[in-house]
Image (cartoon, rainbow, N blue to C red; front, side):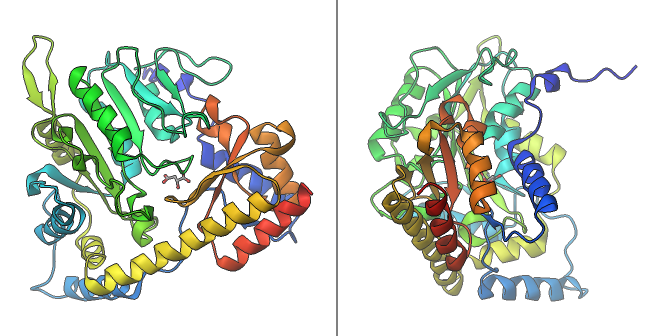
Amino acid sequence: MARINEHFRKLQAGYLFPEIGRRVRQFTDANPDAKVIRLGIGDVTLPLAPAIVEALREASAEMGTEDGFHGYGPENGYEFLVEAIREHDFASRGVAIEADEIFVSDGSKQDSGNIQEIFGVDCRFAVTDPVYPVYVDTNVMAGRTGAADDDGRYEGVTYLPATAENGFMPGPPDARVDIAYLCSPNNPTGAVASRENLAAWVAWARANDAVLIFDAAYDAFIQDPSLPRSIYEIDGARECAIEMRSFSKRAGFTGVRCAYTVIPREVTGSTVSGERVPLRDLWSRRHATKFNSVPYIIQRGAAAVFSPEGQKQTREQVAYYMANAELLRSGLGAAGFTCHGGEHAPYVWVRTPEELTSWDCFDRLLEGAHVVCTPGSGFGASGEGYFRISAFNSRENVEEAISRVSRVFA
Ligand code: MLT
C-alpha cells in the first residue's frame, strides 16, 4: 500500500493563487461581459525587452546548428551567465561572491521551496507574518510543523507579526529558531529592509547559530540606491545567509523561468555529532541530483538582461511598474484607503475599509469593481484586514482600477 505523506493533509485547502483563480473564474462564468482587471498575482504584463528577445532568438538559431547545439548544461549554470551575475549583481556593489557559490535555477519559487530539504526535519523556523506562502507550506509538507489552528497558524512555527507599528519589518525572534526566512522588498507588504534592519538580523543569526534565507526576488524595484539590495552588503552575512534572486520580476521572466541562489561557503550547518558542514555542498549535491540546468536558450536570454541595452530596457520596465505603484498609492490614498509599501516594491498593501475581512473585501472588489486583488489573510493571520494590490498591469488598467475601486467604497 502506498501510504501518503500525511503532512500534506495539514495544508490549507488550496494554494492561494489557484484559489483566487477559481473565484475569479466563477465570477467571469456568471458575468461573461465584465471587464475584469487583474491586480492579484504579481505576474508581469509587459512583453520581454527587445534585447532579451534578440538573445533568445540568436540562441535558438545556434541550437539548430552543429557547432552551436547544446545538450545538458553545467548544472549550476553556464559561465557566461554566472560571471554576469557576479559582476552586475554583486561586484558592482562591492560584494565578492565566487562563481561556485551561485546556483542558476528555473525559479525562486522552486528554490525557496526546496531549500528546506537541506535542513534537519527537527529544525525550528521563523517567518514574518504575512509571508509568501511557499516558505511555510513547503516546511509543512516536510513535516517541520504541527497542525494549523483556526487562524491558519501552524504549531511549531515562530511567526513574527509584520504590522504598521513595526513598519512591516519585524526584528529577530526571542524564541530559539534555527532558520529564518526574510524577504525584502517584501512580498506581500511592499516594505523594504534598511541596512540597520538587516544588520540586526545578521547579528542575531551569528549569535544564535541560525541561518537566514533571504529572498531578494524584488530587489530591482528598490528606488533608493543607499538601501541594501543583497544581504551580503551586510558584514558577516557570508557566514549565515543564503540569498535568492530572480529574473521573473526584474526582467519579465515569469513565463521564461530563470533565477539563482547564492550560498557562500562559510555558511554551515551542524551534524548530530556537532561536525560543521558547508550548506553550499549540500545544495550543490541536491541541485546536481534533482536538476539538469536551465536551458541554454533561457540562460542566454537571462545574460542579455545584463547587456547595456538589456539593463536600460528592463530598468524602463521596472520604472513603468513603479509609476503604476505610485498611482495606486496616491489614487487609493486620495480615495481614503490607508496604503503601505509600493515605494520600493511593486505591491501596495492596503487596509480594508469598513473593517471588512480580507476575503470579504476581495469579494466586494471583484463583484463591485471587477478588480482582482489578493486578500491579505491569504499570506498569514497578520495579513487579515489588508489586501495586496499589484502594480503589474498596463497604466490604463491601473487608472481604471483606481477609479472603480474608489467608486465602490465612495
Ligand atoms: C505573488 O503574487 O505573490 C507572486 O507572483 C507569486 C510568485 O512569485 O510565485
